[in-house]
Image 1 (cartoon, one colour):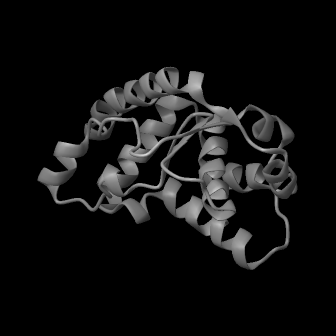
Image 2 (cartoon, rainbow, N blue to C red):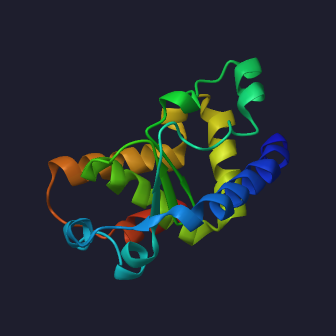
Length: 167
């Protein structure tokens, strides 16, 4: 119940920031698309946008004060390299290919869940596991990012996300 209550303003936060920042965002460069094509559908690589500015031009998420009160582990926005809002990645610096891969996993998660369900899963994961790294959506993105970095055997990210979300 608490996760559903918190997820409503989080979904609004995601939507508001997406609408506010999408205008100044750029498409992925062709070289990055080519490098990531074995992992992601062309539709995602062609529609995702990146907004780069330091510091990140976004306010703290609406659950920040609650996270602090509950003693949950969640990174400070000022230390965050990138954050994804639907098909928009907001970053403070040029992203490494691994960081971009991680954020694109979130784009796939958003695409499969929608903003409201993504927010609900994210908040529930934080409340249940009490740490950012253990949120299932984040843990899965970190796992696939590591697989991308070390395995080098291409895999279908959409299928992997579907398996996570529909066990």
